[in-house]
Length: 377
Image 1 (cartoon, helix red, strand yellow):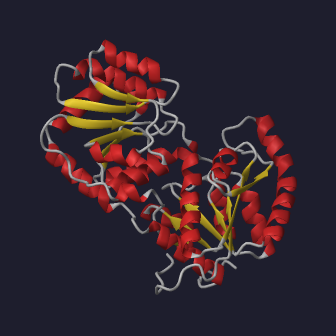
Image 2 (cartoon, helix red, strand yellow; image 1 turned 90 degrees about the vertical axis):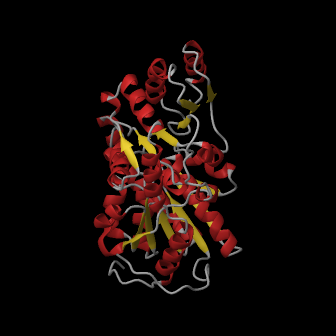
């Protein structure tokens, strides 16, 4: 892995940054956090995001005040034969567009966020001789980053287990989350009901919503659990009705704006195991029950969950094998064993990277300035 370097003034080598790809909201918000930190440390730095025309970045990035340009490119994995063939036909045009964007912007460094739309930009950047860095927030790198590892100078990774994919090019940095998560106390309440926070990502998760509702009849008589449940827009009314029918008092919310505040009030979190969720859980030092998305690309959520389980910070449940009754029994066990939750909370906080922004920007500086020894350029 790339070694640490002595501290120095930030932003000296970075004048223009091009962020490429980022197929999910979590990847995009991670890059936005870095962009804002760069703006603080190096006033006047120029930032450009490039992503797929039909990707989430096209809506999110401009709304957050950054420039965004699009590529006409699709993906290969999880699509039909026709879509895959169409993507092959789009590659020459996307490489040409990438070449033009890079020449016009002339970035100090190109940062790949994963996702298929990062491929053409990173490859064109390599061909033109621009420094390249990958950020990999999952334990298991996605298909695009596994391909691009041969064509970049370095990779910032969130888990020790990920380093093997990138060899000497990797550095353990963690990924940025909102600072408020790091300020959450990891102390677990000792008295009163156990507070469970349920969420399935910003859009919610119907299978998780259904599972928790199936657990309610087995929890209602105990009075040992209270629940805060973010449902997402689609299931909000039906989930709220299920709580009412079970006569179970709970705070049912369509979308939580101030998630760190709700983490602060939670003793236990039930969620998916996406990279951003896992990073936020670790930053807040919260014990968790993780239910990986069964068909996530490259099974990355199951790998993320396993990393926390192996450190004693979480339990992982299989969606297809878990019943409402089994979940209720597990929750009651936790409510009666706060010492175990304390141990998990401590293990979770040990996985946090409160200085991830600084570490990634330091690595960006090194790559932009040629201060590395990987032999990739």
